[in-house]
Amino acid sequence: MENVNPLQQPDQSAESRTLASRTYESIKADITHGTLAQGSKIVESDLALKYGISRGPLREAIHRLEQIKLIIRIPHAGSRVVTLNTRMMEDIYTAREALEGMAARLAARYMPDDEVKSLQELLDQHEQNINQAEGKVYFQSEGDIDFHYRIAVASQNQWILENLNGELYQLIRMGRHQSGQMPSRPAAALAQHRQIVSAIAERDEELAEMLMRRHISGAWKTVKTILEEKL
Image 1 (cartoon, one colour):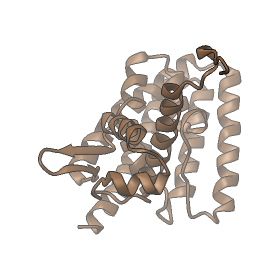
Image 2 (image 1 turned 180 degrees about the vertical axis):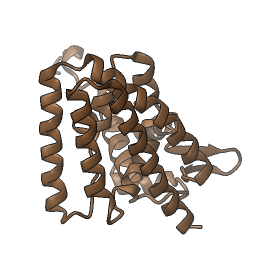
Image 3 (image 1 turned 180 degrees about the horizontal axis):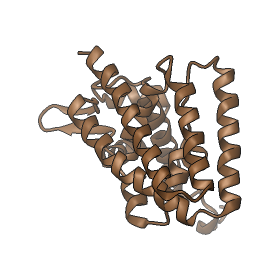
């Protein structure tokens, strides 16, 4: 009988973690984009079939989604996709306005010139994406190609970064996904982004903060209109 070196055997736990991570990313994207409807019930058997995964890794993915508030566990009623309501989003956008305004101020103080140039180039890419979508959509993926994420990182303030890009980040992205599809919003949002970067490039801290606050306030008005129309 052939001897098998246990060190050469597949690491099933590592494979399970990889499957859970992939499923987590897939479900997260589907919730953010609205493919999985807000308020919809989480049925493990249906999701296991949809994503082609066994119950173990699926439950791990669901648990991670609960930690970032995209899935809510309701006692005696199971789990559901989060529902964005007006009060919740008003609280989030109020916090965003304060935090992102300060992030823009600090970015004007600390952001190196080469990173400012990179941010301007990022907005050029965003403009191309908007044009390809015929001006109908302005939605940014996560991480370094997310304008607001880059500003938060540039603030060099760990508390701002943790609050803006922690567990509330995906809820913010859900709201931004909705507002980014309003007919007048993509072009206006891009223009405002360019104004903010110009203020940062000029090292005008006060202007950068004011423009960011105004930008977030305008986004909230758009999201509020969308939420109220759904009532």
